[in-house]
Image (cartoon, rainbow, N blue to C red; front, side, top):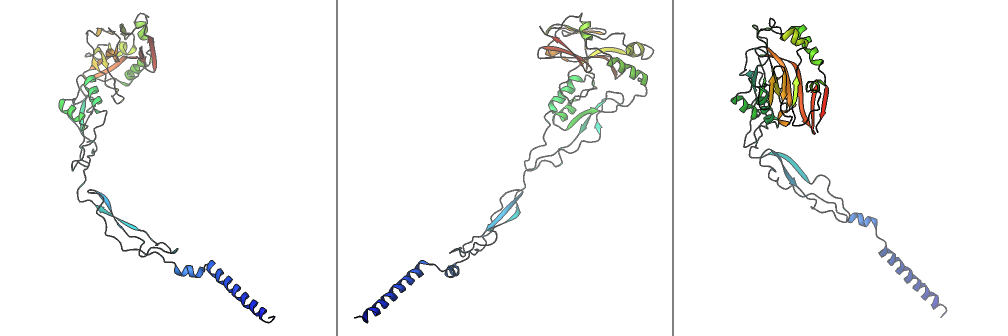
Length: 338
């Protein structure tokens, strides 16, 4: 018995050790075995290109492929490269094209005068750069066009645009611009000394002139306002009131209504005559009632030759926040409303 026991124990020990090793093999994975079983992805064939993405103009056509021949497995790598391709294409229909304005013509047509300072004429452009096509929109008309056309009619008594010109202006095709404004050889003009004298008089105007000429009384909204251009102005005494200098000279009041920053400053406005709004007494002007209908730029001046008008006194009169404002040059006179 003593000899049998050691042998039995030795066999039992071998069985236990073997079972332990088998268990360890089942519990531990083999890195080499895992790498060998990975399957990398592969691209499929490209599909056909799609139809063009637009019916007109430039679009795109696309084709695709998939990383499924085979799919990546067991940690295999994904396919290298792009899964789609794009190419440009043109639609089978022409696109609508909006019209664009061409440059303004260098020529001014239908000038109202052959010479002098008042000539006005029509400058044109075309909606043809390019023309609208395939039901495209016409050229865009500037938003201020209608306002400018109204200003031209209101502030031009003799050189307003004709019906044809006005139609072109409203369509955005026309501009009413100065033309033929060179000296008329048969007419007299102011010399340099006289120009300076006139400028000095304009710069000497005082903010309180309207207040003084109204008797020193505060002006009220809906009350009268008196404007006066003194005969003591040097430009009147030394130039315009001398009959031998300009025998055809005549003076009058004018009024213009500036409603746009684009309105030309050189337009004197329409001559004022006696009416239910105004009383004209030579170099005195009475505005019956201060209200929005009588706002504007009032000028007293001389038309010393046909078409040649020079301002001697000017009175911008407007109502703002229940204040009547008469301004001269850069100075403002504010007369409170009661």
